[in-house]
Length: 161
Image (cartoon, rainbow, N blue to C red):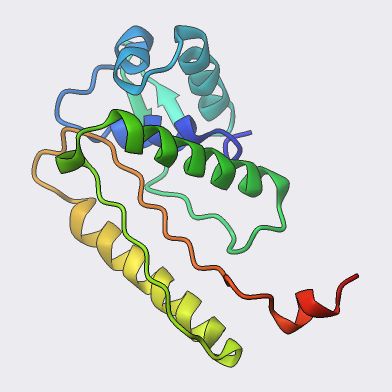
């Protein structure tokens, strides 16, 4: 469940921002969610041991971070990526240009180099996370989505009926 809904990780990231409040209404307002979605997510995160609610009601992360497996075999990971694409589409229409960055790169690639290309993407993501996850005073939550996919029919696809 945690993997299949984008807002579980958004809530965890939002907890690191400067003006975060351990309040479902506040989180719902800032992330564009319903109070019910936030409450359910908090209950799930607590049940999974990712989050703890202290006696004073403050939410505390029990774990530093999470990483999913690579690839799209798991249906919950596929669902998460589909939601990411939909969130990106919505942001492209609704958010100010200065608050976003959309780029694409089209290039020829030897399929034998695909594992190395994927490895470079992971390295870049890790470096970006390490540099900016420790920002002085984070005030917003962003999601980076990098897609690398063939535009040509690969030999495997050409052989399919």
